[in-house]
Length: 213
Image: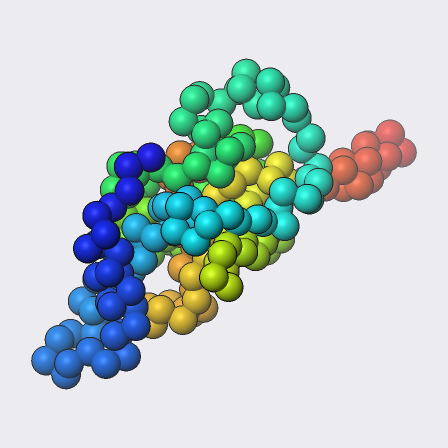
């Protein structure tokens, strides 16, 4: 993938490190968005390209949906497979979900259709990727991703299938309830205007027994 110019990387580090030293004449929200946009470039880049080799605990995990790579290729397009199954990253501001907002509905995993985020979790961070301040409880799993030079960041994946969603960042100062930003690839998601109810197997079994009684 094409990497941002070195000058952009320098601006990113200066923007993030200098955030708390922003001049009083600069609106804080504008400063936050600029820093978020620069850090988004870092989030989009493979960790190994910045800090050497990297590893994530998600590589060692098992998930309920255990489809093989060939089975995933049969249901995902090329870009979805690259991002969800190979931990790729789409280009910033390239997906319609970046600027898409709805008062209701649910964002689901593009691979297995598991509900991940509610519409009211989404906010405008200005980073170039869909941003959410929270997820549906238990729907998203976090894994620490370690690179060289002692650097680390937190990967987020679908709890049901392990599909790569993006990364989560904390303490950026956005006016949200959690002060977190789930920076998610739009291609990893689908959107449903309804609120799908996913029943647990034991609930289905209970209903089946009750109907037979």
